[in-house]
Image (cartoon, rainbow, N blue to C red):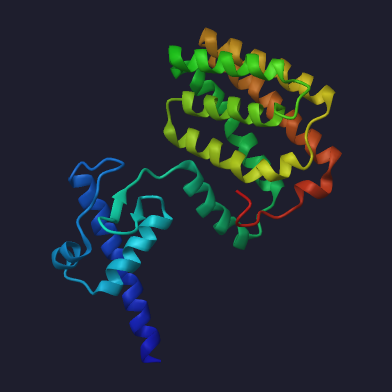
Length: 246
């Protein structure tokens, strides 16, 4: 039984070391692309075994905090964790929770209206311009295979325009998790027209700074979309989230 205890202690030490490295990255004001110290220097600095250091670095690489360059002059290089890193970790947790598409749709429905309201209060001129451009592209592609992807892009932009990066992160991650589901179904021509009509209302309310108008329009849009998916393909919304679908 002793090896199991030792393995547990090693894993805990590697995690603690990973946290120390992150704190040092922050304290050193390192940015993406900066090289960290070589392995021998890190071993001396943190006073750990080589295996512990490598396990900590592998953990940080999986989280998108660093990437490991191979070859001469290689080693850990600071990276910037992306939405996909978060979505991937979240999908693994949801996999074991037996979460399904219906649960993701309900979560989206719970936050989307408030996200739109915050965007109406906080969107910048740049946000509004990008949203308007995306909506125009959506209108041009109403009948094309690009509609669903552009639709998700609009909602992602709205999430980041809320002024709260947590909303942006969660909105984008939810779209990554539901992407494969929605691609297998798609929207009918009638539903696409409905989506566009409400997106125009949302954008107009956001432009005017009308938080309540944006909230109401988005609430109707996401509720209608969830109802459409549930009625058209009830078996699809019952499908489980599986790690690796993002």
